[in-house]
Image (cartoon, rainbow, N blue to C red; front, side, top):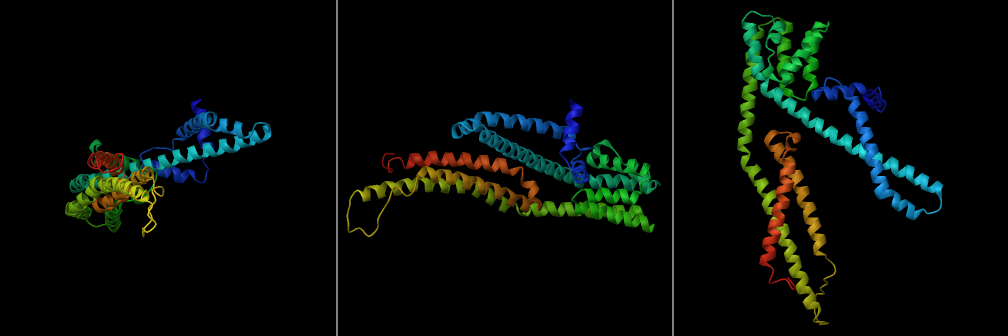
Amino acid sequence: MVLFAEDFGKAFIFKSLRPKIKSFFMKAGYDDVPYELFGWLFYISLAITYFIYIILVYPKISIIVASSSVITLLLTFISWVIIQILILFTIIIYMYFSLNITIYKRTKEIEGILPDYLQVVSSNLKGGLSFEKALWAAIKPEFGVIAKEVTMIYKKVMTGNDLTDALNEFTQKYDSPILRRSFDLIVGEVESGGKIADIVDRVIENIRKTKALKEEMSASTLTYMIFIGAIVIIIAPGLFALSYYLLHVMIGFSSQLSNLNSPNMPISFSADSINPEDFKTFSMMAILLISFFSSLIMSLIEKGDIKGGIKYIPAFMVSSIIFYYIFLAAFGYFFGGIIPGG
């Protein structure tokens, strides 16, 4: 059954796409594409589609089409295909973003540990080892992702690949300018036959200076991040909650004025044009939308990358909605005596 799931997963992926998919999964830390997982995901989507069809779709089809079995079969086929495609599309989008976040974390981990790894490489070079052996001797478990990647480079070199090509393939694998520039400089020095240990030490110094500069820039923008966070979590929910009760007040007064039935009034009020509950729904959606984009803006300010803001999205959304309901309760107590019927 497991083999069947793997073969079934391969059947849904075109051969032309398999190298790109394999590269994508390898960036996320997988040694190979989990075709078996794709097969099981198809089975899961099939089961979900079945329950959705039986519970939600079939009762409506049976009401709309009571006599014609051909039309019923056609609608069943169309609805089944649409439902399963939507479910598979949702699963694929979720997997894509999850893997992208994993790749982003691996990239940042590599950038963080790279100076320490190169420091060991430099020590090995100064100890008399060649560049190739210095790379292998520096592999230690505490270096995490980069140790695994260098191990893969070692395996490629041992099977006949050129070291320069293997290093270039490694640097192109991740979207990291620091990683690419560092190894481009080192590989260039190796090919020119210069003092590799000196260039490695300069690369280490430059990486650490760049890291310190980024941390300083992040600290200098802390005020802006606090300001954005206060707007999203407190100010925006408070203003929307206040607007909700002001709307109630306006509708109450307008209904009282309309009861006067004065033909000489210059302004006509209508209490039926705006529903406060619709405004409440709009407020919640607006707050969630503001929270989503604000988290991405904060990520750009702090890290210079949108992917780093994914972790802020749930916290911002939940916090802003909680404060929205807190403000609704507080303003409800305050405006209780003003709103007619409140």
